[in-house]
Length: 203
Image (cartoon, rainbow, N blue to C red; front, side, top):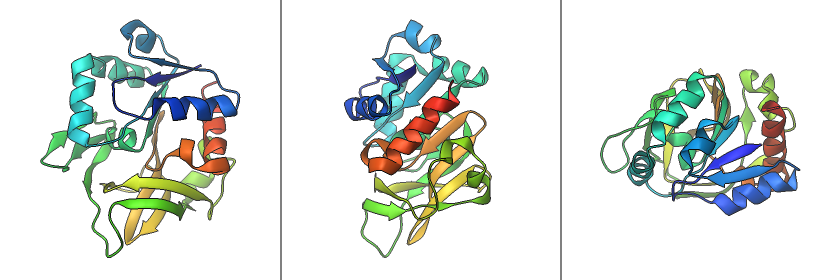
């Protein structure tokens, strides 16, 4: 069972439908007991970092999410949800993130159009090639991005990236914490393969 965190920020229905298409049961919830007892979590997110982290704080879910990670249970951050996994963001000021992964979220500076919106191919790292989350995809597969900020950090957690003027981390991992900058639920068959692999991981 995948528990999708409902904190008022994110494409909950489309994520739910994506998992359903690959035969994985989900529940959308903001209930503390449900989150506390979840075997795996998905943290969605769209919009501004500051609004999202404030929404999480207002729900009182942050301590539960941190305890979930401390217990080495799986969590997947999607788009802004991935950015929230990092230490800080510089989107409209400086804001503290959940701090599961070292690094900051910075403005995307590119000679290409910003926001970065559309399909781009992934380059899988050596570390990514050995990770079970990526077992059904390969370098050159296309995924769908919508973002104006990107993660600027060390490459220790990098599983796959995309070139868009700069090197944009596309898939990251630190222990049982995973993140995708793109939207797997909007990325066709490639995205569904990732959701399928996540479902197999949590079993």
